[in-house]
Image (cartoon, rainbow, N blue to C red; front, side, top):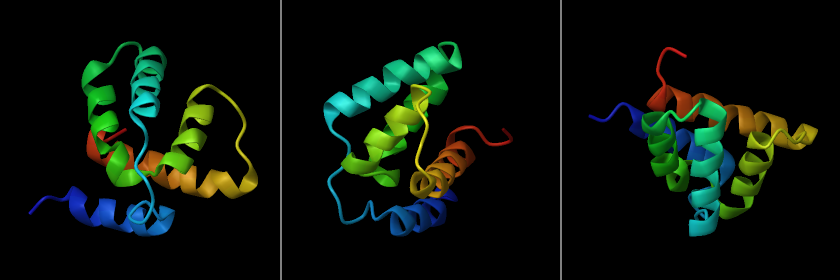
Length: 97
């Protein structure tokens, strides 16, 4: 059984991603480009996280993810869901980090 399935299901329920529109193609491309910049061109990490996006976040929350990746401050209400997203994506894409 895929170990990431329960993790992804829990996050989708937490963020509401199961009921909302997935990130747009433009958001996904922007995410990958920013991830490559932030990670020092770690293509395998960025590809993994990019591929997880529709399972973890919706279009609306993707804007929050992109803002955080660009170094912008998050609101208090955004901090917990963003932390959950980071934790879950790292569990799948960067175990041991």
